[in-house]
Image (cartoon, rainbow, N blue to C red; front, side, top):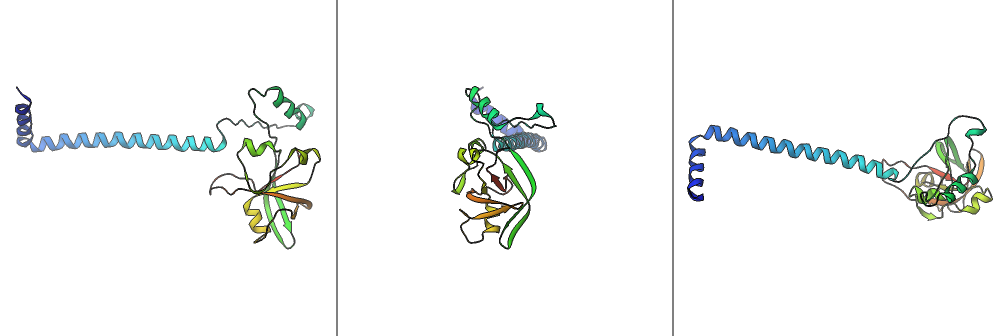
Length: 201
């Protein structure tokens, strides 16, 4: 039997059993659609999870030190030495000390319950947090314990509306800091510190 004859028989069989043929086609269509929907949902979920992990850094490890006592304290110099000794596997270390409920003030303008992060220059590279203007923290800021700060766009717009914040003074919980940089604004929903201070933890 040739292909043409087989084709004619198949068409004749379908036309003679329209109800059965419709149900068969419907079953195949529903099955294929269900598989496509399941695969699309799985791929979408995987992408969301991957994007969430990538936003934190796929090669980033965060270690929290809790508790009290001398055996729980780590100095900034010790962390830098540890990174240098293991430079083949560690590209950098940025200690972080977060303070919540910080009050910022300049003249008559202020912001309450703002978050401040004390860190080091390596933070910019490790967490991909560039500045849109000015500069980030420097090693000299840490060595000299300079009271300098890199602020976020929300702080810049609130405390210095329509003005250039670079070089301006800002009070952080009563202590006077000099603004040396403004962080690049990120997409809505991404975690972002309101400000970075150049005082090592």
